Length: 284
Image (tube, rainbow, N blue to C red; front, top):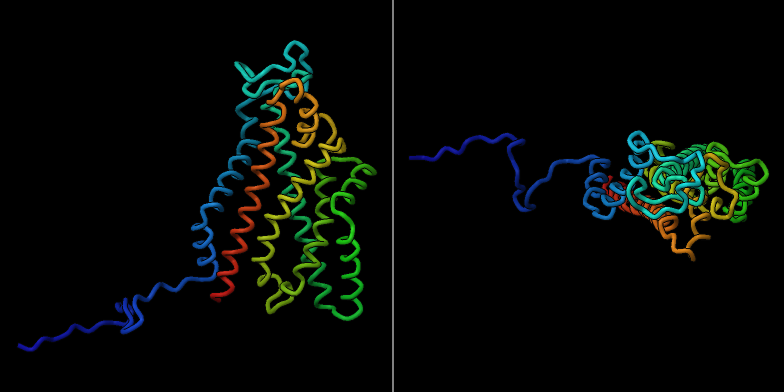
């Protein structure tokens, strides 16, 4: 009896004659997401960042610690019942301050990154498209900003005009814009302008967030941070360090660990995004 082979449509073929299995066609962004998800450090960074976002913004809805009114009867208390992270020299609840300070740090970080990316992206695109004298003049402005230490500019402007969440976001954002305009303008004008630079923009956002959070913490530590009653992690760290000799570790370690973890998480995410988007660009 003759064997009659069933007819197969092209869609039923799962193996090439000599090339092995044929994988499903994936878009560049699907490939980038798959590579990012395989990076364990990146996933850990995302988990840490998400935890702090929920901790700082949703936490105060459930935990109502005293962060405004001085309570001289409960000063410098160690962690314990009623005060999970102890109290400060003015009787403020340290856990409540950690949440409020994190709000300010994250708000400035994300706002400054957004402002810096938008301004830097537009500045670099205009300079690249215009070319010639316009390009040279605009890039010299960028060079001036890049030649001055980042913290020095922020410190001077913050002292001159005062520090607030919006003010620090604008100051740090404008300084970050110079970096974006100077480092990525050729990508912005390549082929499809903004869409083609989206990967670079996303990576820069994560690193700019980390830089902004560090800048705010540094300003607060130096005593030029946000004004009472608004506080940030740098303010808390600066005040806590003066009590380390007295053994009040709860005023330093929790806030110090928070700064380190959030900045580390942003850098881990940025490194993973850069690697995964490089894969996407290579496979396009």
